[in-house]
Length: 121
Image 1 (cartoon, rainbow, N blue to C red):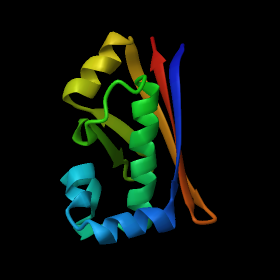
Image 2: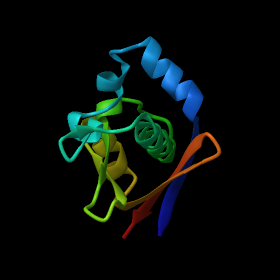
Image 3: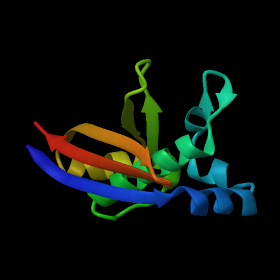
């Protein structure tokens, strides 16, 4: 059963400006596993998609947390994104009866968008 859905859109140009203006922003928003892709740094476009996915997860959790490192967006070998929760976000999801997450990220026309669906057994 679907427990909650979250959706977010990130403007790529705005995201790139924020990252350029605040060099320490990336490590505050993302875990090392999210910043790197096969030993190299992810593109800003990819990070903007992950940022939107984290925001979508926060919204699906009812907006009760925004601890950036508690939500980790990782990719399978196929490139499919998935959600790994830690600490407070994990506790909130468990309290809502979460058993599974679904997340999708897309990019088009200068935007990155993501949807996160929280499912229970």
